[in-house]
Length: 83
Length: 201
Image (cartoon, rainbow over all chains, first blue to last red):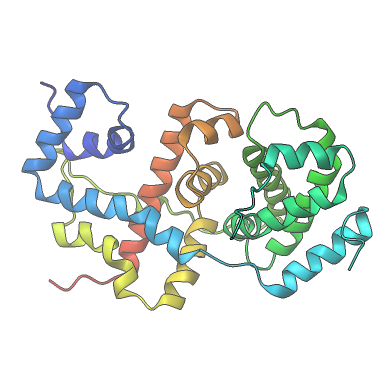
């Protein structure tokens, strides 16, 4: 069984989560994280990061931007010609 | 009785639009404008996103006849939008901002985490602990401060939730490269979030 330290565990974390590690490495990481409070805490925050950023940047299209797009395409293409 | 309407597929609309059917193009625009705007905000800024949006759909209109259906239509459209965003960033010659490298995790000479478990975990609660508007501002700042290569992979994979395989195909790199870029971006952004939230021990 390969020995895993925090630093190598962090390096392999994405591959681990995407399931592309060998079964042996996957098990070695499981074992390390199960016995390492710091890595367990790190993994929790690593996994939440995409969701937090996704929610924080989920902008919706403003009506004026939508209207500008339509006007722009009307002048540059033959689409949106009818009102 | 309500008869469910069957929405035409993107590919069917693309074929009609390529043959000159403007109403099919308009449907494509309505179907994707919100998603492309959000992507443009993430890859550039709220200020630049309207221009990127316009440029993207103009390119789509012009290049629809060359869409061969080798990739999914959505992926093809995202590629056009990403390129438009990249061109916009370059044209604007953004002022150099300090890198997020300093927010990477630190290890001692035994290869163990330096920070405490509480410090390591706190980024997971950034959205509970920070004011929503401040977090939205800081999230944009974090994305803007990522190196270009990492930003694109991170936005497409983690924020737009495309599969690693689709991002790899879109960027013309191996899936392993996408994983490596997304991973580095996650590490930096995670550390940046941590720095925004104080840990009370």
